[in-house]
Image 1: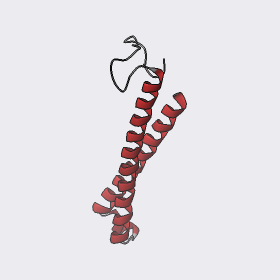
Image 2 (image 1 turned 45 degrees about the vertical axis):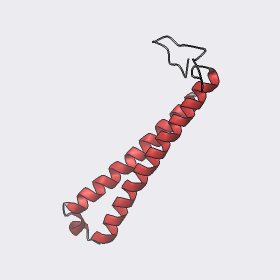
Image 3 (image 1 turned 30 degrees about the horizontal axis):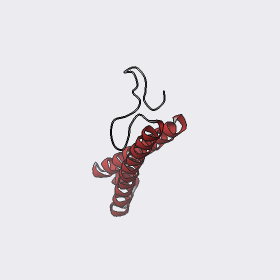
Length: 99
């Protein structure tokens, strides 16, 4: 579970960075930075919005996949059951997934 957690944390940070870079790129263009660098406004705005869209899309997709994996692991180790009451319970100071 630790490897999976690190992977999803990496995906989250990468998507967050993508959205941030795209947002900064769009804001620079809107504030007139494109005129200083002689960049075509239409293509660069399209580039910035595409980066923001992909960052948001893969961020949401990664979050949903992490939730599915976490629920699957919790069911397999017995902390949650698909029907009825769970067979195990963890103390409040212990992570139910990692142990």
